[in-house]
Length: 545
Ligand code: ADP
Ligand code: ZN
Image 1 (tube, rainbow, N blue to C red):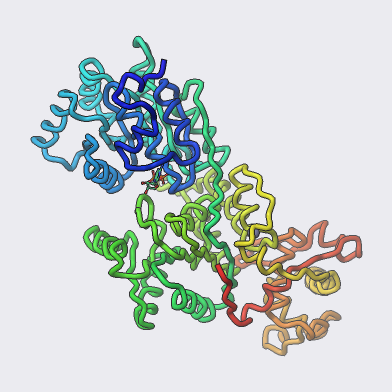
Image 2 (image 1 turned 30 degrees about the vertical axis):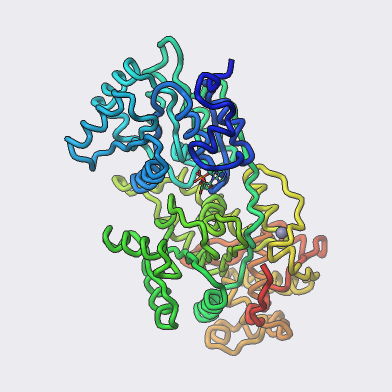
């Protein structure tokens, strides 16, 4: 009893060829299509570019009735519908920007059985008038399924929460007590356990088949580069852009940063354009079009850019600032190399960025009461911690990223900086003891200082603050002359990162010894350090991708 046997096609492959011109299914697609044809609820989790759309588009064409497709972005829907129409596939779009007359003619075509796929924005779908129309469709034409694209938008744990997605469960309720449940096909490129769990619960999926594709993107090279100063980081960035052929995206945290980097790149002869929420819709659209048409090579953008942008030949994605979470980083960097060609993903990482993100997190307050949004702040802090772990890691970048999605990866990928250039690990226990005993000397005097002052004392600086405080009299003064400021900074950061010392804020950040610090001081614990990061000024070596 294969439902598609009643159609004109001998096999699914033939149908695939007929409608889309492809010779074969990508991994997972055929199975998803079969489940959809058998009216199963589905949760399809595939990385961007994996070919999710086909998992609902082909069943829509082969099943009775119309399929209702929900997608969060109108621009994204327009592109998809346009592409389908260009292939002669009967799809249409309903949204609030369409004129009354046009909307009515589209609705008439749907009731006339001339349409197989209807794309709708969630807020429109859930309006009473539209639900009324949908009831008619159900009776007169039939609804083959609801396809919920970007299903992670139901989850606060995802990177793109949309409150209106929470309402989508009403569809299930409204059509529940009928002769049969209308299947829901949920699709997303977001695979964390939490988000997956949320989708299943929020959409009330019924015995769904869950398909999780591998999230590994073998053609992407991942690297983290140090950002010790704005000048060094820009020079490094510029060189990367200059020697890479093809287009690229540079993500920055703020609009101001986007404008700065764009201006600098333009001055340096790179055709770069900005994209952020501070620009008018018209300018944003124009810049985006130019980028897609290759009239501009580089898009400098905030995270506002990229979702649903279909440009397969992006050769590099650079994060000039720290991403807010690993998930977002995976998605944003994943916009490189959708055509499967080798591409490069670079993350610039400097300790100053941590402060910036922490500052942004502290600003998450209730707009009405001004009370801090503690739950949100906690989630954001946890996510930041994982980003720092990723950036400071010495193991395979893929192992960390994929591990975040619950996917095991053996390492040795051969296409990440840590696998290609393993960082030398050194024993820095002695230096750590010097550093921590310096903090202990301050504490004896009832004082607390940050990393920079500690380094000044260790290196025997004669600066005013050191002398005024009489810190040139401390037993730890000048004992660390043999190491550079940069090396001490790396050690300090690493101690914090490994929780071997605490940091508290007292107006500004100060160091505080904890139990583990004392273990180090009592020689009960050794301290290892990946020393490569201590030399950010090292020559920029090209890595064959
Ligand atoms: P996703 O929504 O998962 O990001 P898409 O559905 O947009 O991915 O598909 C990504 C690209 O792969 C598109 O250009 C699409 O045309 C192409 N594609 C999808 N399935 C196949 C297939 N079976 N054979 C060849 N190309 C495919
Ligand atoms: Zn690796």
